[in-house]
Image 1 (cartoon, rainbow, N blue to C red):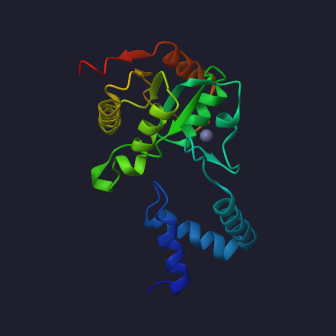
Image 2 (image 1 turned 180 degrees about the vertical axis):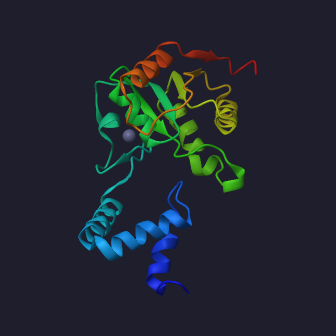
Length: 203
Ligand SMILES: [Zn+2]
């Protein structure tokens, strides 16, 4: 073993982060343990604190520290229009554009059988129940154009058949984790304004 057991464990834990391989994880672990233990303690504290406080809104699955997220709580939103996004960063990007007045539903992923992500994990049945219970009139998907996203939209719209809900889609090639520059923000707003209807009954 090249490092102590606890160091090895930390390296393994860091590798769980997206895009982090063994080499990067090792570099980060050694940096935190050798050179910047104050930051390491801060990181550890912030992570524990966030895990303690942050949870999914029971209505829309947005990450929140409140019992219900501010968007679901607000009386100023269009409660009949729900925007379905893959993750909280995309929701945040749309919210920051200030052009969407409906509510959200965050899937926290897209269908991916290889990673054991199915409709249950994405809350698809909760979404269907929500459409029924709240008489939602339109579901707008803002997902990218990858195959898994297409499959996810197809699956969800199949479940919504016969529920008298309009489905639409804003085509966005790539959403950038909540930190959009001006051009990207314009692109997002334009995609939402030019959303296309999905005819779910005739698929
Ligand atoms: Zn909510």
